[in-house]
Length: 227
Image (cartoon, rainbow, N blue to C red):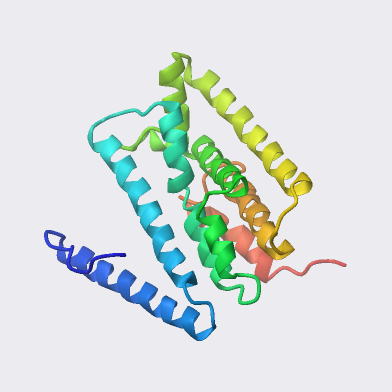
């Protein structure tokens, strides 16, 4: 549980944000109670705590000018990818399928979640690494891999691209061969979230530069689809 009293020392702007976040998740839990899904809202709060801790770890590495080992970075990257929080929030909107046992399962970081998160983290690093080097930023998976194995940046990038492709293969295999206990719409959320990565990081990092997403938005809402 979050402690509302633990905000001493924060600047006023962060205190306000802290209050807004607490209030939001408090109301979210109330909504879940009214829908007969008691306990589900708590998992949304916990997912944000996990994400925030991962961000703080990266901030600590940055402030100490520390480049983590690749394994350290990859482990934290599963959390900092925000996939746990995104999927938890997504499942909250699925009144019929988003039951308490789904959230309990998701909180164990099943292979579907870990693999999806790695796809997002690795593909995001590949697309944004060059831009990140132009500012003070925590080392990406490419930087960590390069330092750990003493290879060139180009070779490290090539290896990370192979890992991202292998993660896609693992995700497909997980979806096709494993006997999933949950409804099809639940399982498909992992695939659909990973599909977004192909849009955000295909050629460049349009997550960081959303102005480059304009044509996608226009084509989605304004352009007619020929049948």
